[in-house]
Length: 183
View 1: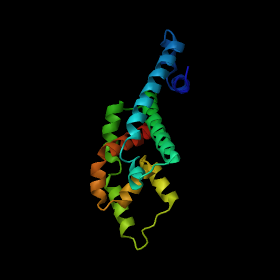
View 2: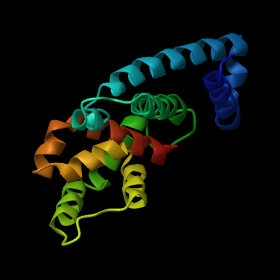
View 3: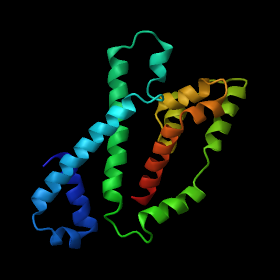
């Protein structure tokens, strides 16, 4: 049983013990689920590794170092693990709304992507357009976006066009934020 299976089994045991008790072969079920999750994480991480937000740094310099490549892969894997694990853990509890209805409600009340544009424009218009690494990391955590994405946003001539060109990344980040709140 891999570490994904162990996490899911622990979560289900805590939040849905009746479902676990109803399983005919819990060991096999969670082993199979863990293997499925590992495959989903690997697939998503592979797609994320080539996303524009994670390759911003590569476009700036002609030669990519080993550390940059490793960092990009690790970031993609962590994002993928968070997305996939949250999808598998979110429904095991007993939310007051079904997941799709909760998502609709969340979409209506979540901070708009316009806030990111306003932040980038304020930073660009500042007489001192320098931002701290800590500020960037906090914003990245808050919005569930890679710091490289935010760096690209700040360096874009027109931040709105940068966001439009990277809608897929924003959608994935919104899913991460939603699942964080549900979980």
